[in-house]
Length: 419
Image (cartoon, rainbow, N blue to C red; front, side, top):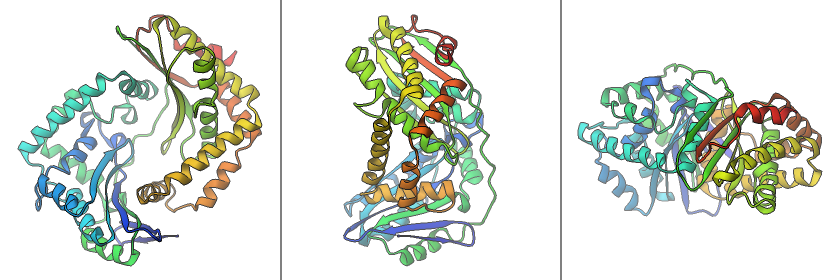
C-alpha cells in the first residue's frame, strides 16, 4: 500500500514499502519536459538533465558518481516530453545519501561554463548519432509530422542549432520557470520508511517557495507527412494514428487495439507483414498517451521495392481489425497488458516510476485492482467500436526514410482506410 504526503509548498512525497527487499529506488520526477520549452529553448530540458550530473555547488561530477557507486548503487536520469526524472537505486541504509545527492543535482547545479561546453559537445554527438540511426530519427520526424510547429512535436534532444546556443542563463531560466515544488514528485519504493522519507524531504525541499507554473501549449494533431529519400538498405515506414489522451475513457481501448495490431509475434501486423508476406524483419504497434493527446505508432522496415505493399497492407490490417477482430485476440491483448503491468512492478524502480506517473496524471494513485478492472472492461464490442471510429476518422500522420520514392502518399493511404 502506498503512502502520500504533500508539503505546504505543494511538494509531494509518495512511497510504497515492499517487504523482503534490502534495496530501494528513490527519485524526483519533475513535471517539465520537452513540451514545456519555447521554440528557442528546444532541447534545454534534456540539456538540463545532462548538466545535473556535471557538478553542483557542493559536489564535482566525479563526486556525484563516486558517492553513489561507493555504496554499490547507481544513479541516472531521463527526459521525456512531459517530465524529467532523476533517480537512484541503493541499499536501504543509503537512502538518505541517495536523496541528498538527487536533491543536490536538482536544486543546486553549478552550470560551470567549461562543463556546459563539454556537455554541449556530448549532446551534439548524441544528436548526430540519432540522425545516423534511421529507426530512431524516424520517430522524431513522425512526431513533427503529427504536431508541426508545436512544442510537443519538436525533438527531445533538440535541434543542433538550438543546443549550440544554450548557456547558463537559459538553463537557470528554465529551472526558475518549471522546477517549482508543486511540479515535483518524490517517489520511492522498496525498503522504504515513509515517515523517514518525509523528514528527509522536508530538509531538502521544504523551504522551496511555492510558485505557479505556465501550462504547456495545447497539442493539436495534424495529418502531416515527412518523406526523406536516401540511399539506405531499408525503407523505414512509420505511421501515427491519433489516439486518446491518458485521462480519456477510451485510452485502454487504444492500448488493446494497438496490441492486437502489433503487440507481439501473434499480432496481426507481425503475422501478415513478416510471417505471411515476408516483407519485413521488424514491425510493431504501440499506444502512447499524453495529457491532452495520444497516438498509436506503427513501424516497419522493408526493401525499396516492397514499401508500397507494406504501407498498403498495414492500412488494410487496421481496417480489417476494425471489422473482424475476435474475442480471443482481445483476451490475448488484455493478458499482455496486465502481464506487462504486473511484471514491471516486481522491481522497486518500476513501482517508483508508476507512483510518480500516476500521481502526475490523476493526482492520486489508482490501485492495481482498479487499473486491471479498466483493462478487463475493454471487451470485443468496445474494440470494434474503437476500431471503426479510428478507421472512419482516418486521423493519420506518416514519416518515411530511405529508398521510399515508391511509397504511396498519406492521402492515398487515408482514402484506402476509409473506403
